Amino acid sequence: MKFCSNCGAASIALSVPEGDNRERFVCGNCSVIHYQNPNIVAGCLPVWEDKVLLCRRAIEPRYGFWNIPSGYLENGESVEDGALREVWEEAAAKVNIDYLITLYNLPKINQVYLQFVGELVGGKFGVGEESLECALFTEATIPWEEMAFTSSAFTLRHYFEDRRSGRRRLHRGCYPEV
Amino acid sequence: MKFCSNCGAASIALSVPEGDNRERFVCGNCSVIHYQNPNIVAGCLPVWEDKVLLCRRAIEPRYGFWNIPSGYLENGESVEDGALREVWEEAAAKVNIDYLITLYNLPKINQVYLQFVGELVGGKFGVGEESLECALFTEATIPWEEMAFTSSAFTLRHYFEDRRSGRRRLHRGCYPEV
Image (cartoon, rainbow over all chains, first blue to last red; front, side):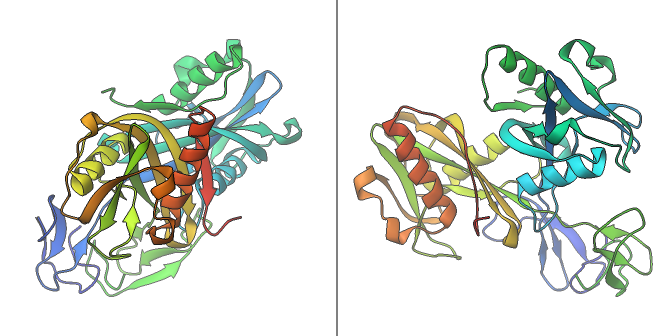
């Protein structure tokens, strides 16, 4: 941040505002405080019979690697709506959300993943604009070495573990681990 | 947003960037796109014996009303760390986080509440700078008519319901309801 989005002055500096306890970007001209906060990445693992749907990324970062349909939550959306939108955008598929499986923190890059498990409606899917291909995988065929992000592997590992014991529950994680 | 924080030009306008499907604040001078996304409000309901700890707000909005210790997640924090910090800042108390009880969406104001249940360590608490007072309440003494936010009432209602049946589970909600 170089200029103040409120007054246009090149007077942005890090300082601790009165009554606060951490550094913020503050404008020395108009005194407006520019807060910056983590972003939510919303997603859903589509399930069909004994398989799950993954997408191979057509965009950076991690172009060509496999991922659970997920992306930044937008203003005006619920987390559930964001997850449904991402499944549609990345896999041209519809899901019925079942439960939240993952709260996964990436504090170094200010991201919080919230991923659901959902039923892939009719077992039908296509290939979204942000994907090179989409495909259904059994547990035995998951491309573990080609996963885009640690969040995806975290969710998939817990999903298959819980499925064996018939559990539907939330898992919390952090990278790096604490 | 009136001025571009990257180049300082008064050239910000809403438009749909190439490859995107929704309006963003885009600078007509340097072409930088200024994304805006929802914020996480992290919190924890401290539990001690048959009581829960609430804080009466010393700040707007909803000055004087009761709330579960909660506040904006900061960059560099996990959701759990944010919840622990808020309990400390608002109630000068420490908690051991037990489980995530609430995912509550407020899409009209771009907020997502994530609230935990935790054990109030030693049953001890004080009064944080952002609180007028803090107090322990049994279910029968909760000031339902003086709750600050619908998110707090949502979490409290489900906490007491589940406690009667010995359940520890996540509840998802949205305001307005969908």
